[in-house]
Length: 146
Ligand SMILES: CC(C)(COP(=O)(O)OP(=O)(O)OC[C@H]1O[C@@H](n2cnc3c(N)ncnc32)[C@H](O)[C@@H]1OP(=O)(O)O)[C@@H](O)C(=O)NCCC(=O)NCCS
Image (cartoon, rainbow, N blue to C red):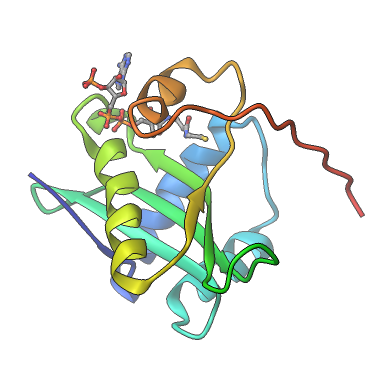
């Protein structure tokens, strides 16, 4: 049984462990100050970052990080799911699915207009899961580092 809930102070160590795994997955290594800044924001109810934790049998199994923002196309907030990660030991057990469903439920409850996310075109495992929720559109991303 998967339980999804808000991140709490007590999750800090588990979150750092999973975040390190997520960074490894993307072959990136973020400075510690970025990781700690993100964690502080996730724990701050006033921040626009939303941190959700999936627990399986009482163990932290995965997380989602999302950003709630305004949109020029709607009157209610839009949610960008920025990061999704499931501990390799728990994969294939429905945790990823539960983390996405959780945001859909939360969004419907709180009146968000939209939930969206991007992934690498080649991330087949993730896409197999995402395709069960909605078909990908044909937009491409342009990203300029400043
Ligand atoms: C993508 C990811 C979040 C999926 O999490 P998960 O908990 O394994 O996903 P679920 O168990 O909910 O699986 C749901 C569906 O995904 C697919 N899937 C999951 N595990 C799979 C596996 N080992 N092989 C093939 N497909 C798999 C299946 O379609 C499955 O649905 P089904 O069981 O009804 O067939 C997880 O694999 C992960 O963290 N990957 C590394 C990081 C990543 O890619 N994050 C997303 C970046 S955008």
